[in-house]
Amino acid sequence: MARENIYLGKRVKDTRKKGLDNLNEVRGIAKSILQDYRRKRISYKTATSRMNLLKLIVSRDSDFQSPKKKARAKRIVDRYRKRLMKEKRG
Image 1 (tube, one colour):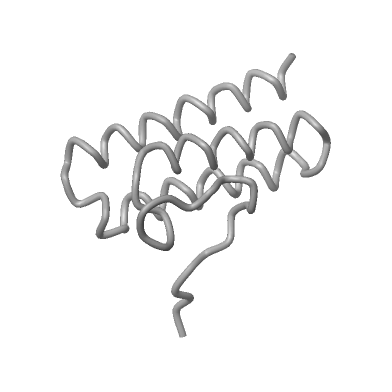
Image 2 (cartoon, helix red, strand yellow):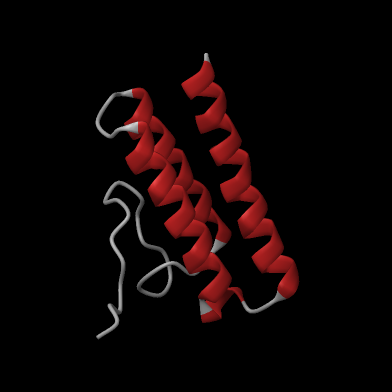
């Protein structure tokens, strides 16, 4: 049985429809994951896993069917993933 809504965080306010449906929400969730890692609320492994899940959701979500919108959302996630990796090293 597939889950309808996947929980990635509660600090990002839902706008418009329920669930992930716009670029601001993608950016907010990615930023929250990075902040949680910085504040030691989650481990690096958990943060990476959540970033991967966020990218997977974006690639499969019907709200991101436009190739342009999907590509922008993936770039946002990749940008925050690079920041996460940089913090791990430094």
